[in-house]
Length: 625
Image (tube, one colour):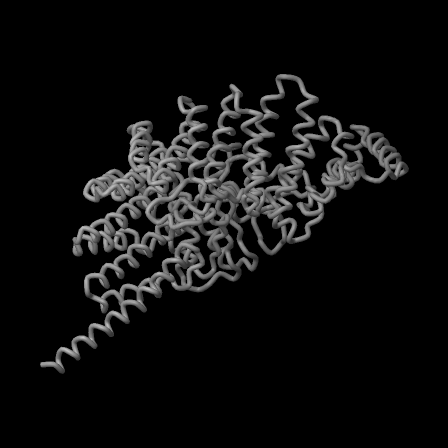
């Protein structure tokens, strides 16, 4: 099932000697019989060949109807063509039938999940029946944030498994009030398909093992008639192919190192491919072979983890360096960008295994090689390397060095106009402001936060708006630590005013963070009721939202509320609040939620002790009377 209009899937299947059954219109769904074991391709929105594409909202919604719903819609529409009162099949009917009878696990890749689309409507109807699917559905998302944008009826169903990339690295200190920006982990579809091929032990297609034999079979199947074969001298062509096949078999040479690498890539055996790459002499390869090594090593680096990923990206970088010495000047900018990317991915892999010293050397290598480059893509790679270097230094506690790195990045690219560089510089300034807060350089931190807001202006770009929100939240923290809680509260109120109505999970998380911080500041000012209102506002706004960051802020709000209630002499209500945290998040896997649950358990124990002391004091006072 695909929502694409092109025929790339059909063409790919034919390359492997199979003729797919294609359904590109509701009236063609009868072609498909799931029991026959054929390759079936369903174009949910039609194909471009017959200009029967559905790309407008009304067209897509109509395609999502069941046959009974379609019949009702046609009866209500006087201009609809008559079909004699018969119910015509629809894509929605087909999908519901598949979901009701399919004994295999459906896999969803590269699909955003618009709720009015035929796929989502059919899924909703099937899952709403209450009965589980015959086999679990696995829905893969590119980023963890994408999972939070899927509807709860899907993500919370027992038959649906959401597969997301790993969580980004957690800070080593308490970053509750503010959070630095770093690289977002992703899960590309290529990696998912490679893992499935590897796990299933699927051999490479016969097309790649015996291409001449496959071509012979294709010719024989195409020219089945003797008259047709004679007219086109097919026998002569087949004789020449047979001679070529015999010649190749007579040579009986073992596959070359590159051919063996191709086989391992086709089978997605990336662990074996890495071992093979380590044995290849890069000096013996020509330009095209080096390019294949670079591609294979990059794929292996994405598919593997730990030190294997480091080794794979290191091979990709080494092969790229050798290739750079062999190409002309026109090809060097593209290859230089590939080298910078390989070094950055190597650094990320080193970060994952906690080899931060070598990780920082990899970032320094990028800056040394490409720091003076004029090409925009290379400037972006340098800025990204400096952002990540500063992030790592800050996580290690060396925020003074991190600030110097951020200053270097701004000095190099701070005046750039490109949208990606603007985004990167904004992230760097946000991180610098946070580092300054940790260094207690509060005045400069406030100035940097104001600079982020001024640079972004009234932008509608989601990532720049996210930076504005982070900068304002951080500015509020700096103001509060600078003994100006009233100004801090005004700043956090500004965050809520600006972004309270947005749908982006990242911005909503900053709104929640601003409200939690505001509650803590109000508590410090002795405004108990206002503080409790702020915490309750977080729970009311974001209760039940699946986004991990928002769940973390809801937990923080409840923990802070419990602490506030205890401090103001209401341990009974505090115990109830801490119990709510434990009930909601006690089984959560996320590290931030586990931390808040631990705080709730401690807060609950303290509140119980406080309650016992107050009861003892009350009993003692009663005895004295």
